[in-house]
Image 1 (tube, rainbow, N blue to C red):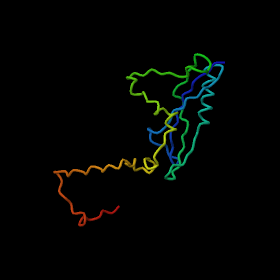
Image 2: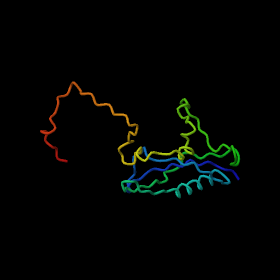
Image 3: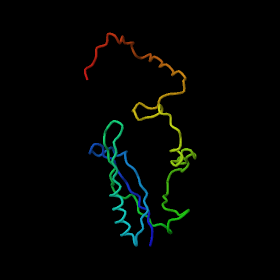
Image 4: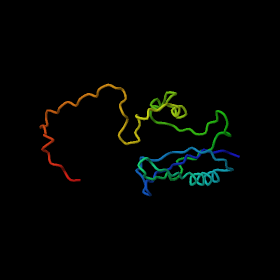
Length: 155
């Protein structure tokens, strides 16, 4: 029986509202089916079952929901060591897609991360180098403001 690669697309909903188009993910799933129509139906079943909910550090709940298929391709042979499960032509130079070994997902998970060097708080990474930060240079086009006398704006 033939094998297929189904490329599933999921989009994010946050607190029940669809998220921005920039948030989503792509899943590559193997499907065994007797023909393309059966593979398509099975890929849709698998996609529907991929709904995944989460709660972020701010307490907002989100869900990745199946949107549809990006591709469905029959494999050239059964899956096994070295079998090609998906390929795509890129019309741009491929070199920017290259990663060093330690940046590949399978090895990146093994890296030790500095707890202070995280983005979870929304503030960006903390500089742990110990070097002093450069002072901002004054802009010659602005007038100095006495902060103590500046009125507060209501929010």
